[in-house]
Image (tube, rainbow, N blue to C red):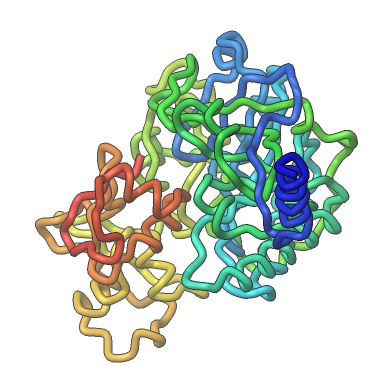
Length: 417
């Protein structure tokens, strides 16, 4: 009788598990062996010597291509060309900021337009980690539209990048069933076998954001990838028309004028002499010639239109500019510019109008990030700062030991990298 009861109990338990909610979760393990050493990079790393990267044992490089609906990573083209030249396997990712499905479709088209003509070796990636207050149902709809649209536009497979928290609590079974996972889990990634998500396996794991790799100044994300990360079709991505009139972040080519120096060019574009030397492989920084073409990676669409006399920055409004765009470019708030210039209508500025950006005793607002620290401005939120620098809110919270993510104040210094 006892034996029958035990059998009955086991049967009931198995039946319950079989008919349990469809969102039942699984432990997560790597999809296969062997695994490949990798990194993921963006403009934060600046110029990278990929020969040294390859020699250090790195095999796969994921490159940030774009963010939102009109921001192209300043180093995307440079990273792609140089990594490919060294025979490294490359992949592209997009930092998604959409708050509805229409924006998701637009961002998918923008991402596809940025990577058009390139030949990735690895599956394309959606990095969606700042949700702007949308519900779980809404964010899954947004993710679904973005993923399906990118796949349709590029004819390439697409995967999801997510930290563990979002993989557990945000992304649903439909996403997990149709799109593979690259997971961010800092520490011993072998412990992932003991946690539960909607995914049963990972094909990539980002295990630290403090990696050190020869050829890269400062820290870099380190990753492991399984063979499932690679595309079966590595043909060129077809052309997709850019849905926007402008791209806010770009690589530009500057023709040296008489009297130019690398220092004046670097100052004009908000970069450094060393970056120009590295990108252009300039042997003698003191020797450039009129008519020579200099490649410049810049994080702003606003170039060469400010004056820096008398210790302040005066910006001349260009056609198509908005106060929001100008404020973002200089790392200040719209209110800061409004108050500085006694602007009556923030929605009404004119080409040729001169706007004071800084006080005469403060020229450090371009940018407001120095030595990897950001100075919080009036009106900032952790979400807006995270979006600006292409990181997650949880990353900033953990990096700065913030107890209340909803409470930051103007003047506060936040470490951002």
